[in-house]
Length: 237
Ligand SMILES: O=C(O)CCC(=O)C(=O)O
Image (cartoon, rainbow, N blue to C red; front, side, top):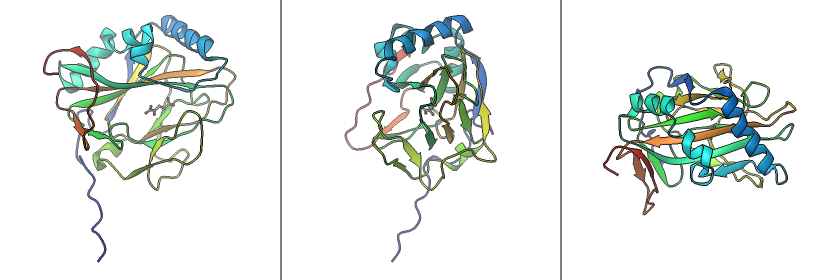
């Protein structure tokens, strides 16, 4: 007998409304953000590092960025006053180097699901992010379907294998919305929102910081995985 099709987990509406995202949230002045971007690209130019996990624990400006007042207020509007960082990834797209991030959902991986009512993802533009240098493209409303089956991409890029939604071909989608952002701006996404980004085809590096924020009780761990949270505000951690 065939197994019944898997029912998507956490299907239904979410705290960011029908679209599942909000853009134009300020996290810092553009000139300050661009200074942070210049620091990153100078530090990693030789090795052309592309992904720096746990950036908020390694880089001083990133520790500030995750708690910057404008961003934190916007996050608290969505998930309540007690907020911790579950993880961050700093991503550098070097000029003309192939680096496509496949369609994916931030709130699920092999180790856990994030409860979408108690978590939210943010993407911070550290340099300007444009359609030419690899800004995000999101699928509005896609969060309501819940977490879809996913798998790791093939290949052996030093940056690691991204987790993508199964069966979604790489490349822009006709219903996709591009989210260009000036340096110093951020967008918030429902942790189930399907999104992707293209390679950087310009002559300048593009730097972005992905942050997953959680409220107490948001992490639904699989097996004996124990998340290491970085509390910013409130109690219950
Ligand atoms: O920085 C990018 O281009 C993609 C980041 C992203 O989608 C993510 O980290 O979830």
